Image (cartoon, rainbow, N blue to C red):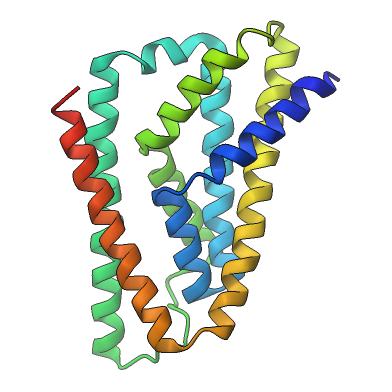
Length: 209
């Protein structure tokens, strides 16, 4: 096994996952409101997509993803999906109010598997993820040449990404137990606003590339 490629993959996977963006915010908010498993589902989905993008990049897809037309397409798609996260937050909040559900009770719809599916969609369509991997693979290609090293690097990326989201899920779940309901509600509102901000920023980017 190429331990150098593995260690590099773990490090890069952890650092890219740690970038504050829509998926990071989604995992944090989900953990605070719905607990560890729901948040970890977000992380598992993100780690799967990070690994897949890394493999595709190693096989030569990075050059395709770097073209203006591809960047425009993923920006528009990402804007729609991330905008959906904001709309989803508003809808779930209204559903809870309509049912009279306490803010201290996790949303029944936010489970590990529903979070995992949502994360797969959101991470795959997130241009921030794609841009990060295009830049990373361009740099990594200078010292990762063989197929075995590339596969090992991709595996390390998945491990590093998953390690970060595991830590984030634990921290978010603990925060959710300690914060007051009013503060949790405020965090939820800020997260929803940030989703709309990211969606608008991506829509603007799509038409200015």
